[in-house]
Image 1 (cartoon, rainbow, N blue to C red):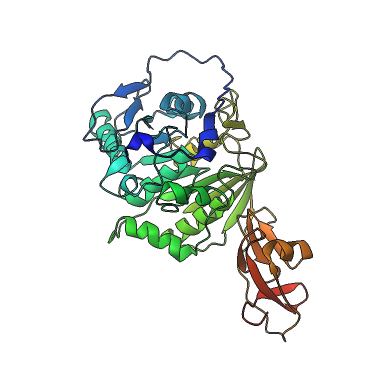
Image 2 (image 1 turned 120 degrees about the vertical axis):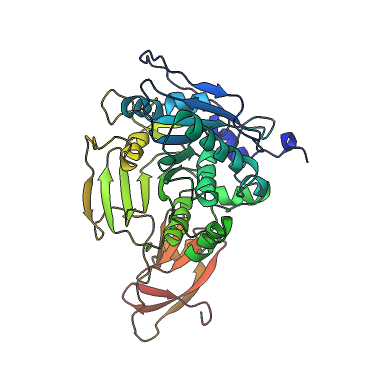
Length: 411
């Protein structure tokens, strides 16, 4: 089937059906967003845009930033906040852009196997953009980072999986795990309600993307709004599971912190970080204003909560040691700050008690289980029971006071 005739994803099509961005005055710059007409074989047929701020030094870092569906490179460049920090801290930007000939809603094709494998398709086109910037702008090949929203966030996961030797870190905004979908049809269930796999199963998909690779892996940040109905927040949990497994750290955070805008941070050994923005829908978090830690323009898919670009730039060290002007309130891992999902606790050795078989929804309603970010966990044992719905059924056996374990055999 020709690429132009690919089925559109209705949920992603909503990503800018009515982009009502509030315009604000911006300072005058000599540097501008520039189209690069030839940067390689470009098998994914993408457009490359670049931004080199005034006074860009040799050996500067490089950030690759990818737009969401129905958006474009200039939209993301103008409103996400990345331009502010490129100018302030002198690093370069590359902004890939999808063509409507490839996808009718201008989504990066994160669900097509030919575009998400090392050495081909859109993934290779983006890698060639990095190669071009390093060769022609003098940027530091060891300090290349990648980020993006929605389909751009899913494509960020693709780049981290297929080219771990290229990127030092990545930030996935409202995105999806690598190889969650391998077709347009399977993309629907990935986006909402989400697909549940074990950390090892998710990790194996990443490891298979560059079989035999034994080098360093990029650090990963995951940003998601808790009220996102386009890409369900459960995907933040699955992304957390995928990348903690790949990077060899526990799914239990080593620390948590509270940030502005109702944002909670769960830190997994400084290798994976999960930022959950309370009440935010499908969007890039921004915080318009003139303070150093403020950025972006609020609009339909840019929500006024927290400047994610600032926190990512600082976390990646792009501020040249300037440090955050607003420090997070940190706490130990036992803090009451929310984490992505409960960790599994050992089952107490007690005699068998009442046994109930019901849907996940009924178990939660009856108080035998609880739900977090679209998934259900047995009270006490915190065993993952799958998605929060009326279709998934489990048997739960009570083994202590408000302590339930999955027992699908006897119940």
